[in-house]
Length: 105
Image 1 (cartoon, rainbow, N blue to C red):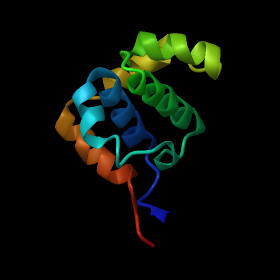
Image 2 (cartoon, rainbow, N blue to C red):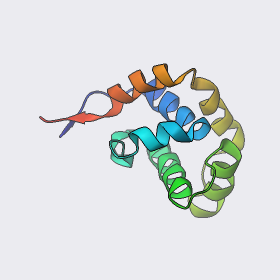
Image 3 (cartoon, rainbow, N blue to C red):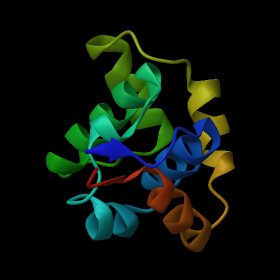
């Protein structure tokens, strides 16, 4: 598998949408994995979001911040809020998601 191409901006949009919209998670979680993210920090953030949703908990910026402090010494809340602000709409996030998913080599 090869990546379609790294885009820090696209990663932020997808993570932000995941934090504000559980239906986006429900719809795309089977296709998306931590390995789809190039940024190490974004992989960690995704893993926290995934863990929260799998335990039927909210994955908003505050919840992700709280959980990541103890598990991965993760990013500050202000960074997570900036990621949420990057998510403009489900349509934009879906397009960004398409840039993160892998395709057969």
